[in-house]
Length: 140
Image: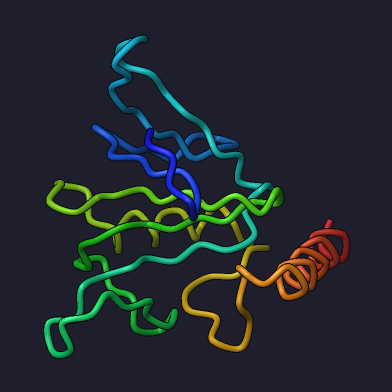
């Protein structure tokens, strides 16, 4: 794990869907191989960031445009307003495939591009958090 100004960055060896959390295995220089966990019910927003060959830019695709072949990073924002960047570029597990698997476990989160909301903005984040919390309460 590496800390950046925008959040936490992982370059995992392996990722897996657990029963209640997203599991991220990586090498820690001091502790060796460790497993980090992001509980599904803490996720507010998830999306892949991928390289667009036409524009040469890193883009966040809308939900209907995400395919399992997309390579890049998986971005996860949690209830604490922490951003996790899981860099899957160049690995066998592609960001698109992992995103699709993760989406099955987080039905109450926002998925894909949300151009109408900017999660970095505190007010928008609070509104997204309120909406996900309300949706969970309605569907329990």
